[in-house]
Length: 482
Image (cartoon, rainbow, N blue to C red; front, side, top):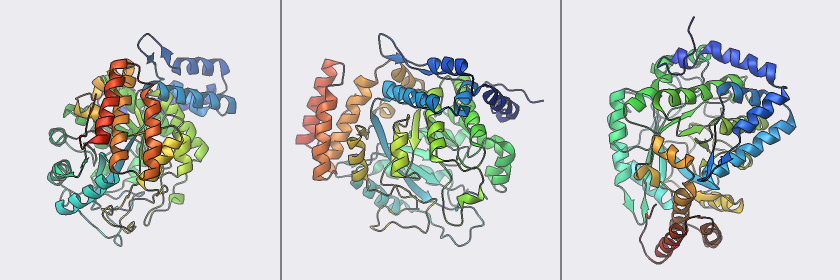
């Protein structure tokens, strides 16, 4: 019998099927245990100290009890604490990014993705370096500073050399006042050697969705191709960290398998990274299966409602309080609005999920990986965030100052976010307002900046941030950072 061991490097031991089943049984037995639930909620709540706040987080069993609880009063408490945690460690900042699809060539047979090898009617496309330049300039002209590059798994069409060349191209483009300052990478599981190459290329976060932690379902959903190897895929983050990448991003595709099983596996994966590497995931993404070319979400019988989706998101925030949480344009404005109050700290804006398309006026649909529910332009998303008292942040300072992995987590835990990330967010917002915003958004943004500057605790930092914002307004100087 395979035993559960969060410190093991074997997938079946740190994501242990028997442990998950026992966790679900424990959660069912205790979902109405009010005394235990109140104890778990109290453990999850942030505690103020002399320097800021601390959080203990929750184990996968504790968090699973909260997820199983159906009491609406308890759910509201969970939502309230999720917002409290987010405000304590990330404030009202929301980090902005955009995906850039480089290629939809893929040799895998994933049943939920239109890029699967057997799909013969979807056009196959791979961006040349010249096309990437045009896409990047279009993204810079929108105001983006942070990209997540995506590519199908194809060793012939999308070798690691192509990915590395693309990263080099992206970082090389300086258009007007625009720069892409952080490139996150979402590509297939690979070798330690290739992760070292990605690290040397200056990537930010390495992102890889597990899709499903249920091994039997995983093998059925990935019937052919290298992604069929569950263990190799699940152990990828350990190889990435061995290769020097200390910011990694987890995620499952909710709707493929029973959501409570996936939730437990996701938290166990975070616990594993903490146990082995001393730092958990930098981000956790919460995508749901969406309609796409020849993909009907209805063929999967584990779809989740918006209310359940919100409950999952809030419970993740309680379990892993210091981890960034991402919601993409897969979701509608209404869903994103709700989840922003439950712990989400990063969103995409103005996204296109086709291979290329940013340089085109009309949104192409023939090579989309999934339907985009929130199709608003970036300026409208920025304005909407500010209307709801969120600061749209284009900051990449921590990555470029070497504050990654455990160094970022230390910053987050010791309460220095307000003196570091908060002013950085305001300065990058000022860049956006000067270079890209509509007149209405610009006026709205500077009113927010004036208010938010007063929240910076350190007087010297507050004064210096205000000086830098004035320089941004009155010159072409950019990229100030704390």
